[in-house]
Image (cartoon, rainbow, N blue to C red; front, side, top):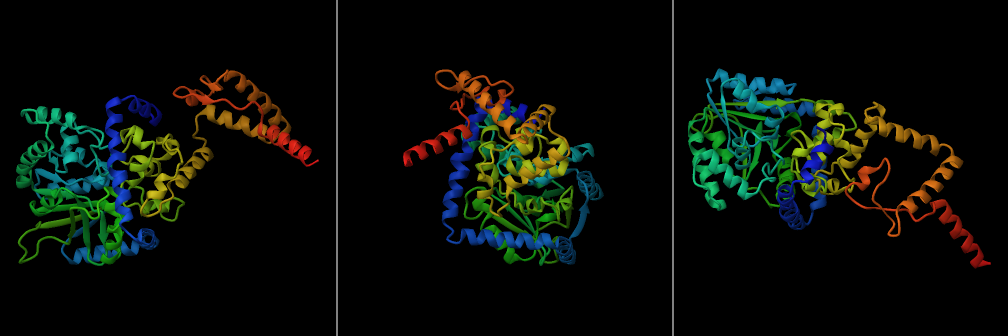
Length: 470
């Protein structure tokens, strides 16, 4: 099933449409208020762009610096070229240490590599501890629909029913009751897990640290309680210094949830050392490529600046109406429309470069100024060059090109086509059925043309102007 089919289903889902209004009511308004508080917001964005570009220009060197400093502090750094290799490495770490249960903090990269399925296949139990991810896990391992609010597509009543069914408890309706119930269930997992897996918002090269941002505090339990901690993230997440981190952290929470700062910001540096009162005995970094380095030096390199804030999807009118599941993979919204074709192959994501209005909201709100519409346009160009469009579209464009190269023929066709469409519009001049254009008229009335072409209108205006002057 392609994006268009899934989007049609989501548009018809009345409950989903109601739930998705929370995006505009919560995240969009909150971001606006948080950004206004920064007098130098645009200057901060420019500084963030410069810092991310500086890393990408010499990514191999910064990764080497990070690896050297992380290793010096007792961590082990591993690289995974593919998603499959990333999952295999983490399962091997778990097997080496005799792990039977893993607690996980929210990580979209773990979704990308199918880590939970890999754990289960190896007989290891993964437990999601982010509340949203936990809700999805007990709901038959449902995929997240948003990168920072994975359960935004569900309402409180759905979650109440799910908790009562999954926990075999009385149905609760108050948010405080539901969160208390989830906390009670997860506490035993925090205390009994052998390994914790987290993502990393950024890697700090100068200290060999992972910076992890959360609002629930579950990340701390995943990194302090188990004896093994694995950080899984993309190779592009490295920053040179803590000063660079400070710059990005002025933008990330404001762009993501509209907060001045997230509730928790952890800097994790190596395993427990002698004299430390807490922390894991073993710490590993698994740094994933999975298509990222292919973007270096390409026309899509700017996409690697992405800090995964979710602002582009929060403001996207398409995402606001269809949600994340319509996009068919881990990364939804405008960022997914660029990342998915680049990561899994353009031929497997043909609809996504078209899943946009090109209103440019995504680019305007992106804290690191990624020109998302331009990148989607480039993907469309690649589709055309590789002949990946549906044959009706190819035929239509070929016919238009044939006529456009012959001005007299083009003028003749458009003159009579416009007159025909005007007649079809009726007395209210609205087209309700357009031959070969049902996509425009099946769900809306399309305005009929005025009855004359631009050339005719322009000629009449020039003629009238000449008479007036005379």
